[in-house]
Image 1 (cartoon, rainbow, N blue to C red):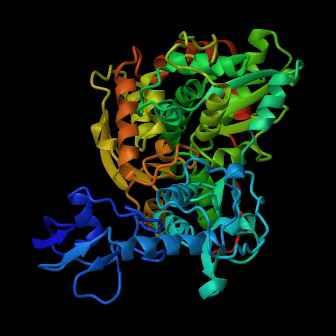
Image 2: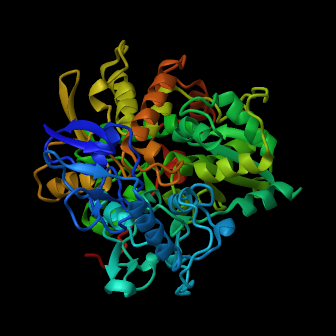
Length: 574
């Protein structure tokens, strides 16, 4: 242990700790901007400078290792003045349009400017006037707002191994730009949105489409129907001042009706349906010698990744559409028919934790209903903004139930939102289908957690099935390289593009720490435990769907509406 003094407080910390880490131990707050707790130290911004006795220069607390007997001062006039000057210099090159910014009220630079009383900047404002990049349907870039913290580059290259963003030029001419030249759509970007979580300001964000929803609600010829993804409920409370997981589902539904949705349904319904289709597809491949291992296909960021980096392994992908797209095709066919509604009038809106879902809905493959299956995708953050704009008081809101048909779901569908959840849900059903026996303990603990790669072996009446689970695309790459080399021992692999799964999706409330993702996962499993039905094949509305419309898993109608094929993107990448 190393002993030092910070602002007169003695503290002992492990050797190799930084001043910033030591300060946290004793409750001393040191401001940061480029620092990210789950990334490598960069020490770019210098906002965290402090005085170290015996040192002529101020030291960056995020990078300076502690030493025995070190005396640190974090609040001296010299330190305060240095931090203010650094912030003023950053702001001198930053657009002063906070009221128009997607991160207004949730911006780390804005918070620091307020904390350090930046009022009259002595430096002349010199904004570059760079063009905004709206080339993708999911994510936009505003390079003028970039503070060169490089956190987005780390998220993209280290966490996701995509390398869609890089640094161009040096010194005052430095810029974060899409790699391979051109705009973001030309890069290997998979639109997962992890860069959005990493960015401390509004230099990267989701493409907002709230106005499209409001226009649809105001149109008397449109019937606006929404679906809610399983990971949204656990995080939406964070957007309206509640703790993670504290928003009751029925109150959430009531809030959506207040906004103006005509019908509120649930993506969990088609999550259960996905298990029936995907589970039977796996069994068919096992029995008939199909391409193995089979990869899950629920995560559109992962699909983009596979199409870009591993097009030779596309046959390994399940042909199942994601639950979002299964819902979209059914709501304008099966549901429309049951409700007696002209599908041309249906405006299908999905509420997703994922920025890549916006791209997925726009894919040309996603029109099996004869229309664009999903008309609009809103992120959890966008719905949070709508709730705040609508002035809804959730403490006084009376609970409301989901609409009938495509609103029922099981605990197996709920856990789709967590890494390992799709695998666990599939195993609950596949076990009973294969063995003909009731699975008494439905909790497959081995599939759970935020560990990057997990593996397990399941005995299905003498047939040993080896499975693997990866969350975060750098972890997915490890499994993919193994498959490409012909060295994979697995039969079934679940991959989620985002750390922690959909609960950490690019459209969720902004968080830069994995601890928050763990909290959301815990909330999901509590909800699963409280469900009366916890196996997808026992969902009564899914049973009715097969009886009345689809007839059987992998049947003709299922293939027409619920399955698809993906294609190589042929993009250049590093």
